[in-house]
Length: 253
Image 1 (cartoon, rainbow, N blue to C red):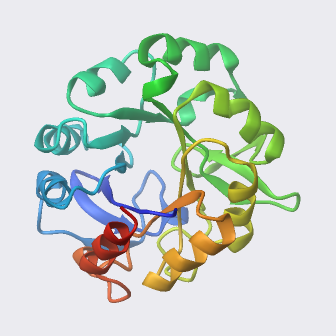
Image 2: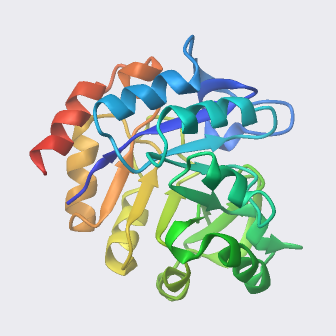
């Protein structure tokens, strides 16, 4: 069954909701900047037993906030953003249930099986999440790295999903083209994930209402979970409340 999964997005040391496709070295188009720190949101999710959420550091300057969130709910949150084989253990020791990796797995624009094995030697596949966040192309979708600005040759398709699923515990997939726009989910991508993912997978991007949880559940036959960011009331949104999402999850327990 499809669950709501929470998030904490960090940018320049603050909890923010941004338009994903706008992120670059100069900054990003921002939907919301919170007056609360990351630990506040981690504690909020802990209070309501919202598991499987992710803390994402979008660029530098976010480590202090990330560590505060992980300390507020040890083993309750996943962490991603600049993860590699040298620092993964630090974040696991700091309280992350899993680490999330994308850009490190690519070398000169090509997927590196050597790097995947390097990080697996530290985390094991059971504490590793592969972030296959992507952009739409003429052929379908391709993984985008470096804060979603660099399009790689690696497609998000049945073959790659099947092959990579043997090396990690979960997939996290942001649809970068619609991330933060509250314009609706990428329905075709959700359908693809539901058809071909054999491990847990969380989709993020474009969700704007409780109806999107129902839609993701329908399109994926309940195999894909959904993160809602900018539309959520705790992030300044008017599309859906955290209370409604908690109720959705509780009905499925």
